[in-house]
Each structure stands twice: as C-alpha cells, then as structure tokens.
Length: 144
Image (cartoon, rainbow, N blue to C red):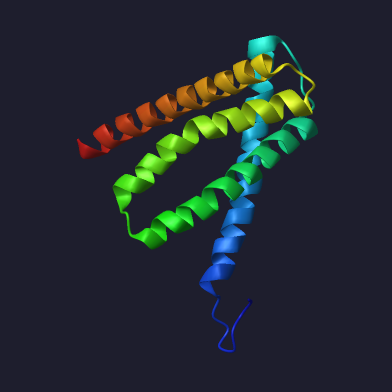
C-alpha cells in the first residue's frame, strides 16, 4: 500500500485513513455523549479519557463484527434491502456491546451500563432531531 509510481493514492489508503480518522473523531464525540449520558442517567462523572477509551473500544469491536458480515453480504450480491436488514440486526447487538463495555470498563452492573447506553441513544436521537429540524428550516428558506 502507499503512493504508486505516478503519485496516485490507492483507494485502500483513502479508505483506511477515512476509517481511522472517522473512528477517532466519532469516539471524541461519543465520549462527550457518554459523559453526558452517565451524568444524566446515573449522576456519574466519567473522566474524559476513560469515556474516550470506552467508546473507541466499542467502535472497534462493532467494526470488527460488522465488517466481515458486510463483506460477505456485499459479495453475495444481496442488495440494499439486505444491507438495511443487517444494520437493523446489528443495532441491538451494538447496544449490548456498548452496555457491556460501559459496565465492564466503569465497574458498573450491566443494567446500569444498559441504562447509560440507552440514554446515549436518546441523546443522539435528540441531536439528530435538532439537526434535522435546522436542515428542514434552511431548505424551506432557500426554496422560497
């Protein structure tokens, strides 16, 4: 891997860099959300580094589970419906992984880890609604 003779960047290099930076930036954002969810759900104050590690490990484990399944699904030629079904199936799996990581890394019972993970989902949903609402208003105002 690496630049070829003509200086062109290989698609695998771009994919790798995108995945690494995406995981790091996503984990930074996720750490803020985890800290907010822990404070909101259980009045706990996780250090930022611990929260970052929890979210990063969860991201890596979920990626390691989803990637081979996605490759098999893509190679089978199943189509977009199967990809959507895979995402729907992996959502509760990811929730359980996240709950387990929160409970094990922060010495909490699994139920509290699941509660915090649920609050994380709620926070992400609220952020999505706010961003979606802003985009809706902007699109309507530009169309006028």
